[in-house]
Length: 217
Image (tube, rainbow, N blue to C red; front, side, top):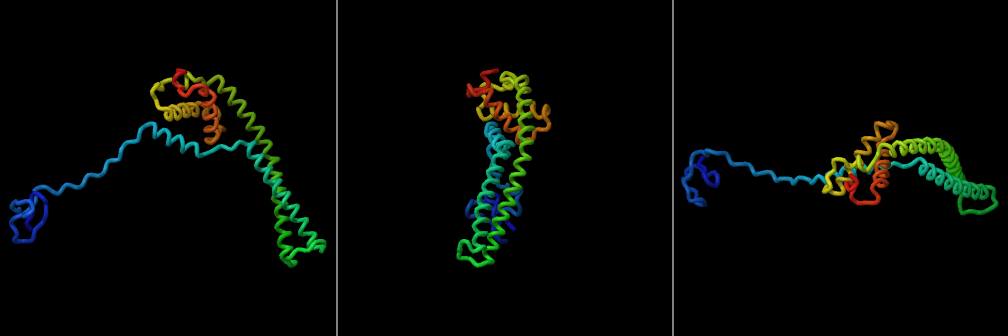
């Protein structure tokens, strides 16, 4: 089949000239048509990569034992008050002391539900008591970490090698990672979420007086 050497269009047999390009057709093309170029994707700036990585790492949020204990106790009291009040009201209704627009079966179901509330309250109070040991251990661990940090973490050491023109997001990421790299081997019992929280706390404490940590180097 004849081809146009310019526009690369194929013509039916018997055609000898391409009217669009005004050139004679050839029996075969000497070069294969070039595939379209893939669209280029612009490279991300290092600061954008750092900010994205830092944001992703902070998604894993550490909840202190003291805060978990407070939330558990609050839930326990809520279940206890609602469960006790509801159970009392339904018991009085079943005894005929008060009248509710419900049949005996419905009242029994509600009493069972409020009894479950009381059970959940008891379990929550028990869990809250167990968390007191977690609070004590976490407080002791944080005291040891802070004593270590006073000796091992300095603004000058953490900023070593960081250029003064480094964007703020990149500085935060690099310094936080440097803190984590020192902290995790010294305290292997610290999980990633707790390490992230401590790194952020130490960063804020060390550099709270200036927005440019490299000034300390």
